[in-house]
Image (cartoon, rainbow, N blue to C red; front, side):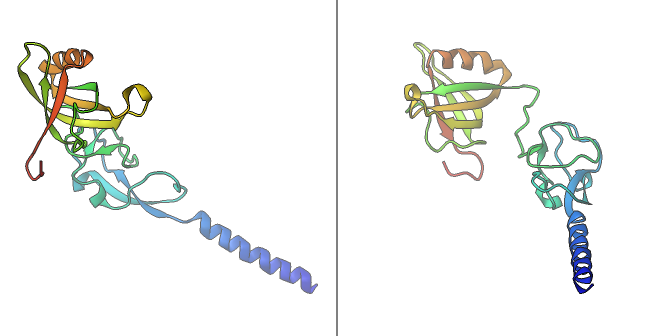
Length: 186
């Protein structure tokens, strides 16, 4: 009888612990209204709600984490806000911009490049004397043997220059110069 009572008490204690864990709610940010891609998030666009069962999902819990960022893909009202759908200012393309992918050999881009850096695209082909302003959207070092030491760069340029930069890149006739932007050391 004593063993039965002890087992019942242990079972009740385990049930209480299990129920408490099921209701572990954490604050998460959700969209207060539909947010289109390209929208800059303001304080009025987010709200904090308590949610359970979101362990392992990349959620944000503080409004300061989202305010001032740019929505990179549409979020419906009540949708979770995470780093995957929010980006920094300037990560969305403007209506007059295009992204061009380049693979540059070693020496054609400075090691100081980072996403967001302002660069000048120098077209180096025979008879070419043109420089085009651009912004680094993404970059990655190349590791395969054929391109070791080179870099893959996605550049945002004015749409009118996109085809010209792409053609020059295909002919290995492009170099990048890192130019300082406001508040950035060259």
